[in-house]
Length: 526
Ligand SMILES: NC(=O)c1ccc[n+]([C@@H]2O[C@H](COP(=O)([O-])OP(=O)(O)OC[C@H]3O[C@@H](n4cnc5c(N)ncnc54)[C@H](OP(=O)(O)O)[C@@H]3O)[C@@H](O)[C@H]2O)c1
Image 1 (spheres, helix red, strand yellow):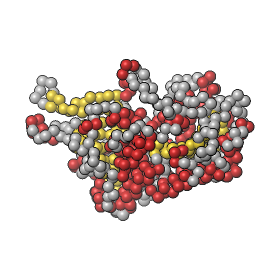
Image 2 (cartoon, rainbow, N blue to C red):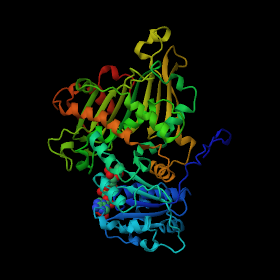
Image 3 (cartoon, rainbow, N blue to C red):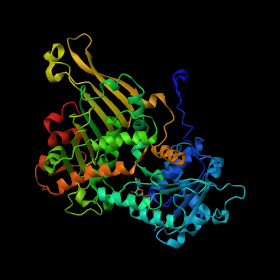
Image 4 (tube, rainbow, N blue to C red):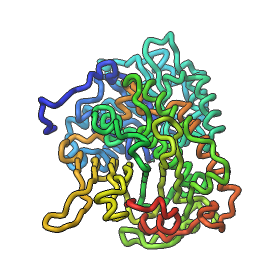
């Protein structure tokens, strides 16, 4: 870290420090486990951030032994860890992998929870074949559910019935980490919460939105509430509109089976973009405690009006890609010709929604959330556009050519913050927009992956970056309205009336917006 130590304020996070645990990964033979979870654990190990005595136990049906499982994870870490450019250090790998075990288990079979119970409740070391005699069996337990969400209630139930769920009388804690998607609508999310709550306390449930683990997203709170110069203008008196964009270049690839039943609004707007919205417009929390921060996010969601069908259709746009050429020069098939997609599918691969947050601070400020697949660009950012200067002096002379000031929070790639302002062009009687740019990569060389942050926080009991049940349900309430309005609209209607706009893969976001958004929303956007 090349930050001047005299200006470096290390926050006291001692109340949250990662504790040793039995770390069960359900779905250990799957894609998420091998691409994200175990490489993140390995990176944390190399950064000396993993607690001593952490034991990692992969759970899946495949017939692996512990030795074979470790070998597979070796290859996964070589391919996906943040330290992959360095050769895997034999000694480090041997120590790290010595803490990894494999339990063959069909999670749908109640009888197969015996070994887990032996470890968690009976504390029988013999249940972990190959555990060295001097290794400590931690009191705490974390269950990471990296399996299809249909299995979440069943796994929670079997764990609970085996005595492995939340238990105030147990010596250590027992936490459940669940992946997205968390429900498909408000009702199913509420049902899922109800079924998890039968066996796990809300305080022990950690719902992942990996966007919140990204450094630039975490920085939103630091940036807003550790400075005096931005907060006074962070309101409807100065801000004209806000745009939050997550643009992706890839199509849906092999995820058709899942995606076609979800679409961009459920897959992205409900979670990642809504979370960015909350962090951008929430009030300062009473403290940095997880509950105070999450309370403020919930207040934002409550302040979004309950739009009628006509109102939400006018505020939303949906699109679906057709065959085209990707930014990398590859031919992308028509969405309807992708694997496991219905040939007459009206699932949207592009969605935008302009809403307002009717609280004292932001009432009336249009906030656009937009996301799309198979676009020309790949980036995520939040842009706050400030109001124009009064129509006098330069504004009177330049009119619309005088760009509004804007503040861009770039989440990926090129994490940073850019402030645009107008200045004279040297040697000419002209004004031009310029920017002050802060780049994270220039001030830091340690950039943890989102999953590293989230795993550490779950091991520490810090739930700030995880979604609370009420947050998830309120976000679904908004998306349910949108989905219901779209379901009632004709796909061949105009974009403003809820029609499905079909765009060639590889289309530039700017071009797409010009075709389907209101002219008033187009100025200044990238
Ligand atoms: N992959 C990603 O990048 C990603 C990103 C965000 C969220 N997620 C979420 O993470 C979860 C897992 O995704 P994934 O892509 O890793 O899926 P995946 O590759 O299909 O893996 C599923 C895992 O579940 C295990 N499994 C399935 N049925 C089982 C059973 N009855 N008993 C025990 N294990 C069982 C499978 O192991 P066996 O076949 O060996 O039993 C496999 O390890 C999903 O909720 C997904 O939405 C994934």
